[in-house]
Image (cartoon, rainbow, N blue to C red; front, side):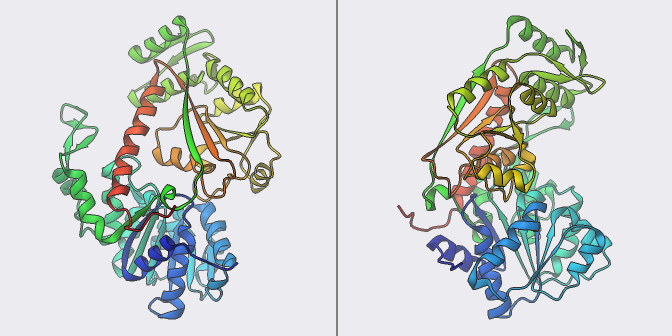
Length: 451
């Protein structure tokens, strides 16, 4: 296929070429893969500045999306690659191939650096979904940091750089610039930009930014960072987010409150208890959805309010395809018991959905993220149970609300049980989005917005 880049794509490619260290914050649908590959073609086969590139991506994206993009575009012919996924033998075989690009899934970064026995002789690293390296304690982060000083160029790609707040940015930019902009140590970063927030005595659970911290952080990273929103550069459909509220009965609300206060409650079909605050949060989320796991890992029914609301929404869809996002396994089981649905898990499921063969489909946010295109199959998404993760929430929404969506409006319904933790989850997602939006706006590429 002939590549006719938009102005913003040319700008982003030139930014990568001009900056040995680059953070490219692109909203879903802007074509980050072809932008990056165009720069790699120039570096590998035109200027000959780079010999070997390692692309690190989520498994599905490493296995399918990057190879498909390379094969898709005419101007990338001659760019050779191998995909290092599968068994250890298959990975080693792929990594020994004399090609320009080695593509590996992020779960195997530690293996590659520390266990494979292969030399880490890459001139350049592409980290697709830089946000997956936001934890400085994760093995993949620590392993890649060991190899990072030998690499001449690095590019971090993501649409959700600070999904859980500004604290995420330290590890991501430590990987990129080795601590030049935000410091070499997380403790120094915290002390400079944050104040203790929630705590229990000397134990600090969360931090909040100091006054002016956001602006200073954004200023420090702005020289190697560009950001672009799909709504600025693409003809995107309108996205309507609708809150559908349901209410517990007085008896159910009393049981929910008792669980919240006492960490234990007696329901009709069994006793439910939570051993700590983290477990309590999970139990409360389950109760808000309508069922909760007991000690024997069997789901105990609590209410059907969300199922009733879901039935109303499906009826209102009037036969138009609907995608349902669930979180707990018992959510899926209860949905299946009441409705005829099919879970999207395989390539065939994706094809059938996009072909309009599935009136109602269900999907788990953890499997609905990066690199999955579902916009051809429908324009309505219902969140039966929310997730605390802004990244998963936005990525799942972007499966339908993206370039190529033919409907003029994408509708996203959040079913919220009033008076429960659902309200706190939704508020948390909204607060995090404000922080992330501020970051993206602060470093937005200075391009003229095309109408």
